[in-house]
Length: 105
Image 1 (cartoon, helix red, strand yellow):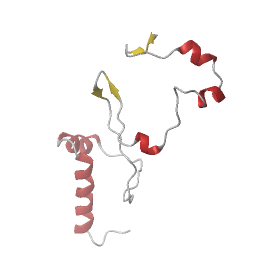
Image 2 (image 1 turned 90 degrees about the horizontal axis):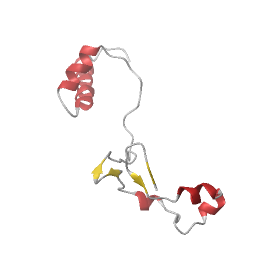
Image 3 (image 1 turned 90 degrees about the vertical axis):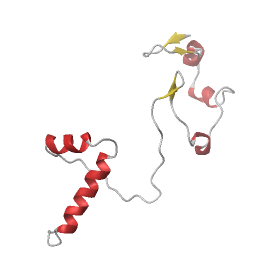
């Protein structure tokens, strides 16, 4: 047993694992094959504390990921409004577009 970078004890026999070939690992009784259903709702925990939340793909993707730059003041003001600031920022932009129907597409 050894400790990882956050001090949690790893309970894997690392010497045995390092000695195995990939083909051996695939047939290891301690490593059964899993399906996507086996992982649905899975969360990562350390010491019983959830580290992050998992989220599936959007059923009907309606948004596009883009890299964009805003003035620091704009981001700070929206972030200061608390969780959900990106949604509020999106709504503010949609309101602006609605109030400027002649804005070029």
